Figure 1 (spheres, protein in one colour):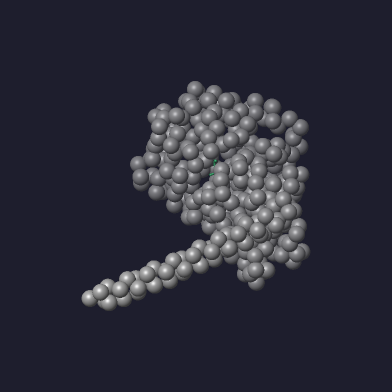
Figure 2 (cartoon, protein in one colour; figure 1 turned 90 degrees about the horizontal axis):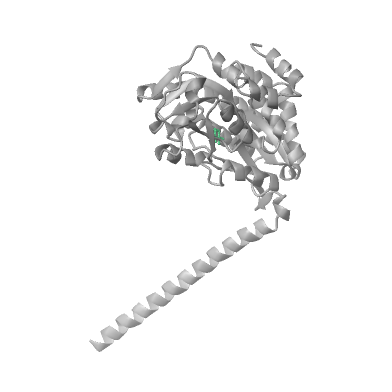
Length: 357
Ligand code: GCU
């Protein structure tokens, strides 16, 4: 009996020992992997160099929309094209849903090189490149085609290139539709109805000013905190496109939406310039081309998805107000043109000429 007990304990101890050795080896291996990851990251000169792993360039792209959003799908498409055309030499790793931080932080990270690429709203980019305000003036474009005529023209290209002033390369434009006001209680029929309402805006001095000019009180809140602010009554409403209104669940708490379409704010794929320039000329060209193709693909997807979203919202009991005459809104924002539009008269004239082309 004693012998059996001894044998069992011997085997027990042996198994425990083998298990402990196995775990220690595993921990050591994981630690080594982590260390080499950190080494590679730290070996980047001030992050202004691409991250190279096993001879492959890895680029991180930040985006604050969920995976099924048209912009996210287009970023995935962009990544696929790049991987395929570079035969896997360059790989774009997409981080959707704001995993790499708020849009504001992400933009400064792309400038610094901590993040290689991002898909961002130009509302926030204008904090660094104020001339971008021209492209997001309220009631500037007649419709999406008008905006695309501008973005696809020399004007759009000039703006993409102007991002070099702040150390990033604008690779292409994405569509973000028209933005509308939505509220938890008060239904909006005209500009007067916005008076004194607390309205969430993007973290943008310009948009805070537009909201003030409309008589409402702007509250700057990061994108991922808006639903909570609506839920807990910290704000009376917000403004965004249909995809974000439903995608971020704002429609659950702000059931009144007015299609005043006060602005179309285009979006850009930006890339740290130094990281881009360190790629081979061939790979740089592939990146530009793939970004352009993803832009064309994205705008089609946007259009299809927007129609479906409006129908879904109508069925879900959201109260959608359509307004025939937006003149009172347009009149109300005139001071914005007087202040911010000064010095851009001829540019505005060129933009107006691209209507209905
Ligand atoms: C749009 C845009 C986002 C932006 C958001 C906002 O949905 O796609 O990039 O962050 O507006 O209102 O903050």
